Image: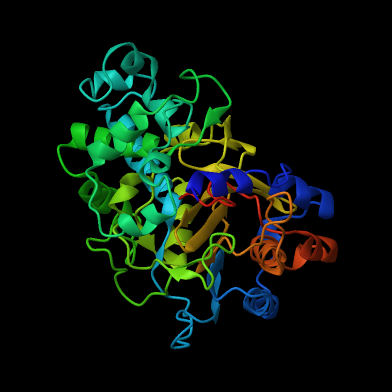
Length: 416
């Protein structure tokens, strides 16, 4: 059985976006006035575990107020409890950090957003293709370069075969570049591809003369004051952490632990580890204009339509995308790796943030048509998201009507 087959099955999820579901469920309200209902936040995170999720941790920030919580277990064998401060694989939220690093170089004049990538990496992307694809197209996924993880993980067996393999970044980029393109560069809708951000990492190395991990650590992680965010140096999660359980829609029964994994296959497209508090701090500073100036932040928020891994078309900026909720617009990213999923978003003014992570993925069953059936976990996650984002102003109808299943670019698929 191939991973691609499971990804295709997952892409048949309802095309309606999370935003549409929410807007239909409750009237608009101001997120900044929502406050923190700590009892409701505790209830909604407990409900995720009660619905069947092994473990969840979350953090919410609203001005000077904050809340953190966890529910369930980090290890189903030892019953070790989840803790809010645990380090977690953030997956494609890595792209937000990489986009900030590239835009910092744009601000310094070493990179031009609309310059052809062939100007900087002529050996990697030579000829006409290198002239057609711009730096902006990499960051907003309109390059139509294929997704290298589809090439590296063609079968379910390859998940274990590649567990300890160290992939050079150039090999990742070449895998995507050598695969058939998904369209013409610059044509929308674009196509979400991890390879774009691997190439962005190689671009950073070319213009800075240092490793992408080192540059991002020094100029993004440290600039934002993040103490628990890093590119792990080994297959192990650094510090106290949870296991990462992958069910793959029932293929793994019981779900299989993938917490120990060499993340070189993702590199600058999805390898970082972080905590929910660090992710909130990052997006808070970003949206407040403390990591980029107003002009560059505005470039990040210029969106184009792209097709996500779930098959839905969403608006995507440069490493971030908007999420329209009953209480207003949020900006952020989601991330998925084997066994772990993450969501992190902030209001446009940086006033309120929420982030939460889970340690079990693809827990749904498939119906007779091969479509994932919404699980009680999906509804519980949706309820928590609304409470975390909108607070007490969230209507009862919205709290009880939403499954969190097809949100974002990484959610709802078997592929990373």
